[in-house]
Image (cartoon, rainbow over all chains, first blue to last red):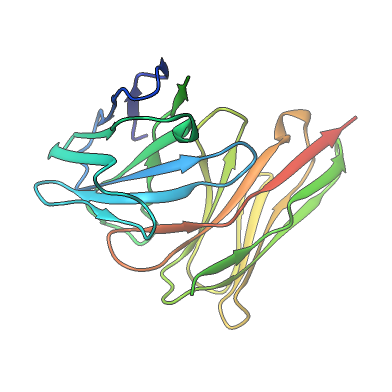
Length: 118
Length: 110
């Protein structure tokens, strides 16, 4: 099956610093990647949709200048949390979607990154 | 607006059957997915429905009624390892975008 990796799996940083999270599709080309945030005991909240070579589309209420997304290639997307604050502490999950060949094609999720801002 | 509802928590006994319901109201519909998520891990794909009816995959089955905006996930022969959150998600809009419900936390006890 399709594999998506994320790095790092866990990061602790000081308030005010920036953190970069990488999402890679290992065995397929992902035309679209998605970034989610998940707070404890809550569901996944879509933050943004990124397509290779174009600007990301952010969901309502997500600050594009704070959460910078770069989808530089068909196998890599990065999320940078700029000037992180304690309220940004969360579980960040990416997913990747290959070109749709079947209506059953789904998103493949990375293992997630646990961000803790002190 | 987009709205997906599922029960917050459910409990069941090992070996039993449990049904997790999901209702949705979305602008556009191109399929409904069920995912399983263990605490601290990424969601894993369980099932997909786009046409009305029942899809069966081993111990798991999923049902869809598009006219009622309703789906359920049926888990049979429950095992302790089935204790997890179950997420209902609707694909609506472009780019294979998924809208997730809040998830149902299932606790299986002996």
